Structures are given as C-alpha cells and as structure tokens.
Length: 73
Image (cartoon, rainbow, N blue to C red; front, side, top):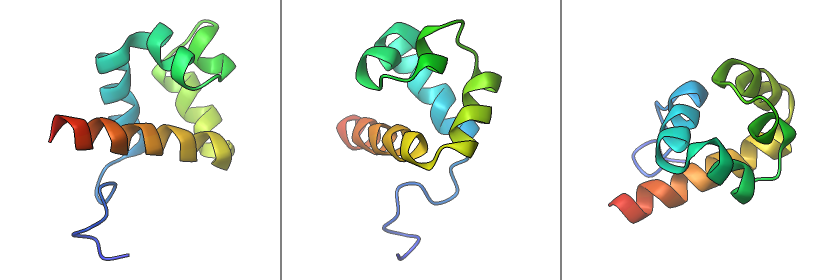
C-alpha cells in the first residue's frame, strides 16, 4: 500500500493506543473492543504486550484508530 494513503504509516502502536485511550478512556475502549487487557486493570504497557502478540486484536485496535482519525478529519 502506498504510504501516503496508509493512515497507519509512521504511527507506532503505542501512539495509536495512547490516542485511543485519551479519546475514549479505558471503559470506552473496552466497550468498543472486548479485550480483557482494556477492562481488567488496564495499562498501556500490558495492552501493548498483548496487542503485539495477538494479530486479530491489533487489527481491531488499528481499525478503530483509523475510524477515529477519519472522523477527526
């Protein structure tokens, strides 16, 4: 995919997760993506560890981030 068209180009997983938490909060994130690391004692560090090992969960988080960026314009 052309990097100019890819909304995730140059965005680290930590950055996008931090932005999602700032926007939705942990409860809102857990409501949108049902992952225990978002609802049970959540932290950026533990969530990053899980997301790096779990491709389906990372895909969901990345898709939510892309949606958020599109809405923000």
